[in-house]
Image (tube, rainbow, N blue to C red; front, side):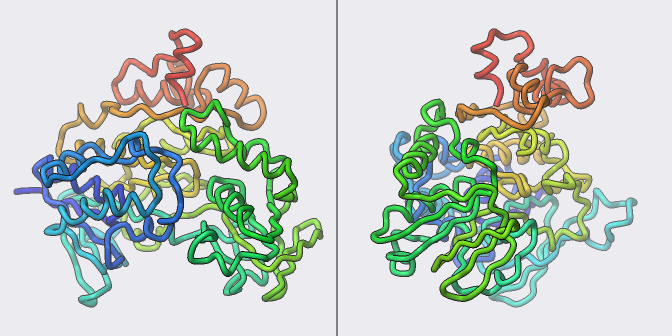
Length: 455
C-alpha cells in the first residue's frame, strides 16, 4: 500500500517535502491554514533575503518545476520574500495542487485509537490530523507526519518569556519585521522609534527605520555590547548577511541610531507616546516600539504525540548542542536530517524553522536538507537519509561564553566538545560517527580544512 505523508504547512520547507515525497513514490497530504501557499513568507514579502537564489531552491522542487517549463531565477541574485513567492513558491504550489488542502488549521495530531500512554500497536496505527477551516472540522489519516508549520506567527514577547505590563494589545507595539518602507511607512515616518532585539530581524528593521525621513531611532539591545549582533562582516560567506552588521555599525557610528545596551524590558506605559521602561529604571520615550526578539514554536496541537524536546530550546535534544546560542553564535549549523530530528513517535518529524525551537540562525537551505533526509528515511532509504548533500556558507564568526567556546574554537567546531563518545573530537564528529560515518574530519584535517569543515 502506498504510504501517505501528511505535511503540516505549505511554506518553502513543507512544499519541498511534498516534492520529495512524490519523487519517492509516496503520497503527500499538505495541510495549510492560509488561503494560499507560503502564508508566512507573504507576511515578510518586503524583506530582502541575505541568501541568494542558489541557497533558496530545493533540488526536488526544481526538478518538479522544470517539467512545467519554469525558468529558474538567476542563482546569484537576492530575492525578497515576495520574489520567493512569485518566482518559486506559487508555481511550486500550483504544481502540487492535487495534494494541497488550503484553509485548514491543524488543531490536533494523534494515533488513531491509541492515546499517548499506550505502547502496543502504536507504530502500526495511522496518524489522525484534525483541522478546522473552510469545511469545518475535518479528520485526515496519514502513515507519517512532517510538521513544517514554522514559527512566524508566534513571536516572542518583550519580557523574559512573558509579555511585560502594558505590552499585550498595545496598538503602538509591533512584532517581527513590519514593512516600514512600504505599507507601514506612514505609521513610522517622522516618529521616535525603538527596536528591541539583537537578531537579523531587529537589525534589518533598524536599518530600514533609519532610512525614513525625520525619524529618531534607538536600539534597545539586551546584550552588554553590540559586537555579537554585528556578525562576521566581510568574513561572512553570505555577503548580504555580513553587510547587515557592517551597515548597522556605520549607522551607529554616525549617530543615526542610538544604542541602549543592557536594556531588559520591564514595562511599557501609555499608548502614544510610549514610556519604555528597563529593569534598571531607565526610561525611553518613543512613539512606536518594534519587538524583534525572535519566535517560538506552537506545540499546542502536539499534546498527544510523543515528542522529545530540549528543555530550553524546545528543539530535538540531539540538535540542541549544535544550535544553542549559549554555547556558540554561529549563523550556520552543519547539515542534519532524520537522525537528529527523530522523535520517540515513529514516523513523526518536525522540520524547518520549527525544528530549531526558540533558537535563531535558521537558513532555508538547512530545511531543504532536513526534508530530503526525512523523506528518504520514511521511504526506507537509510543510506540516503544519513548522507550529507549540502554545504552551507560560513558566517565568519564563531564565539560563545567562557572556556567552552574557546575549547570549541580551538577544535574548529562550534558544537563544542563531544558529549558521550571518547573517540569523537566534538559534537559534529560525534553525530557523524553515531550515524555510521567515519567522522567529520576536523580532527585530522589541516587548519584551513578545519574551518571549512565545521560551523
